[in-house]
Image 1: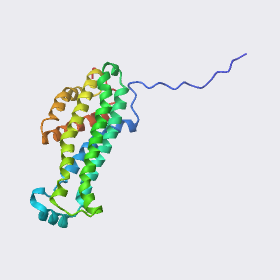
Image 2 (image 1 turned 120 degrees about the vertical axis):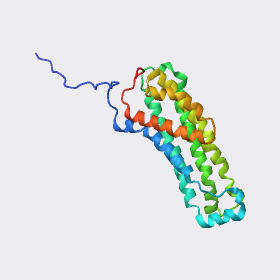
Image 3 (image 1 turned 90 degrees about the vertical axis):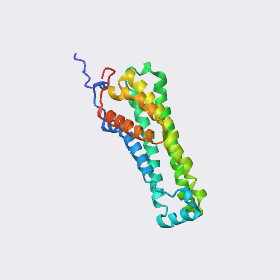
Image 4 (image 1 turned 180 degrees about the vertical axis):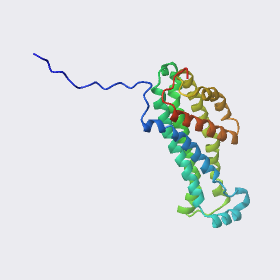
Length: 229
């Protein structure tokens, strides 16, 4: 008597050399989108200096309105949202790599630092938008005091956020040294880049843009990183 033969096949487990689906592959590009969005938002800043006095501030808003300020804040908020997606992509990519157990602190710091950076960016964007919101929706008068409200937002976006970016860079570098998450040259630049992100007001933005832009593109192109890569 012939026993029936099952034609059902077990699903083949994923291998390290398998090419990720399109979604996971392009997800790291959210980091590039994030830094470009924040830089664009800050670059749109041509807003009046509070030093011009109430009359100068009122004249500026009468001429330019608040649209550009709203657009600037929208780009910053978009950057914070994209940073959340970037953090999730980094955490998922790192967790799937062999050797990750060798860097337990760095592995846990990646999502924490990335989330902190994203939240600080979004809060900074909210404070940035408080000026045009006060003028447009609450009928505040354009004045020296109103423009000063943008100061805390600028400090948060270009200074405080740098701490989150630096912590994430250091954690990614530590993980990459164990797992080969990043190309070797990016791993070698990770710690110096993290230090430079904390140096002054202008340099961190340049270093953050260049290093995280390179990280985003490198992760989108890599399919099977190994520690020896």
